[in-house]
Length: 212
Image (cartoon, rainbow, N blue to C red):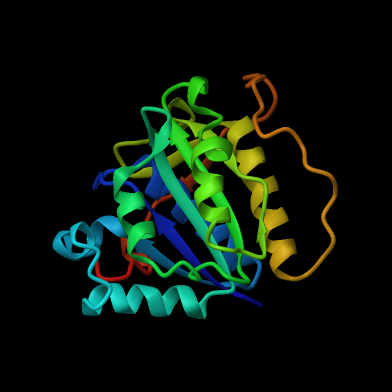
């Protein structure tokens, strides 16, 4: 199976975006992929601020991008755009960092007004880095990502189904399998009677986070 780099562009230490990505990571591992988790907030701020590609930490990240066959990019949406932290990483990467790779873009935010941020803000930047394929992305509302006092992550049913769908499509693309026609990128129904909620135990120590 493939090596996947899973990148969280959230600046928060208690990020819903990062928790959602780690959930996606586990789904990909269950399909046999090797997943390496990277929280951009763990990288040296000065190296990102000055776009210092020679910094050892940035050089290591660039090497990880080269090694990966697939990349998952996750970001919170601020003011209808991806995070400044993610932008600082993308700016320091070589223009060829995504060449030949399969990419899955994911985003989180407080309102459906930000749904188009993936297609109109993030996807064009990723496309400029020459990936082989950007699969269908997904935007998840903050209210659909709940964290209990015991660190149990609960994802609303419609969001959980959507994430499973885009994750499976990404995995199939990595394996070179044909994909069916894209489905709509959001499920606005959120019918509470559809299925029971999906609950996942969050284990911070289990995530392989680079340079944490």
